[in-house]
Image 1 (cartoon, rainbow, N blue to C red):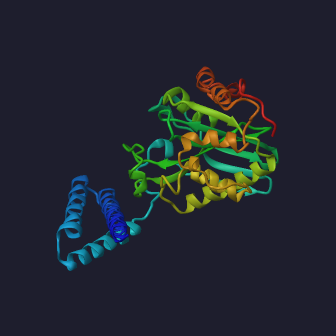
Image 2: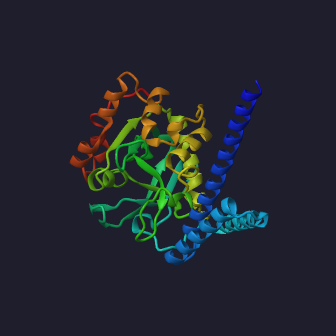
Image 3: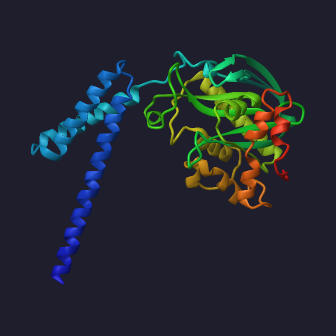
Length: 338
């Protein structure tokens, strides 16, 4: 019996020690990356400081037998945290032209006027004619909501966005994205460390959808949600409020807490959605499975068949630049009762 207690005690000790080592490793990794992705201007300086911090932290926590070195690590780590928290977002950067203008909405009863609506003409993904427009829509003519899933490459992570459907105007797409500067591209790890501001790109489907299907060569799936018109209107008003808040006060994009699908779910909750968190909200390349099994899309077809019919790339390329682009990409989609 005493032998068993010794084994259990030893095992528990190893478990606690392993957990504590993991915690220290995560703290070191976070602070090292926070320094590397900080607002210091020179990449070699950031890399040097990050490496120096990591080396000191490992020595202080695992090799030094002096208690004051552990205290020094804690003080240094808290200094990095305070520094990182103090890094502010900004609207004043050299933005890529696709995200150079922040949209803004003016709500006047039933009428909504939106400035900064993107409707570029693309010749390739990096060759386009810049065109920002002003759109006016009526809330009473908003009838439905459609959901898009786009993939940089097919897998568990993608990009999601929505289109609000009107019976007297073209659909209005809103895509929650990073706001990269000139020369920047999306980087998942960097997006966890205040490297990108947040933008809600409001645009015409020929732009928001067409650039992905025809020029970025991203697989794009379009799902017709069975959301009621009233729920779609409430959701649009939530979006418009956030659009104006961002225009007034910049925020950082964060892959896990302030990104496309996480915010779509958050705003759907604010608009009256009933449902709990699902891991597919984070692994958003699987979000269409969540929509199907929660009954938010047509379920009369098997999921695999629905997904196959929802791939719109061929129809979108054939309709590229056409005035009836929204109708043509929806022509072969399964019908859904709203």
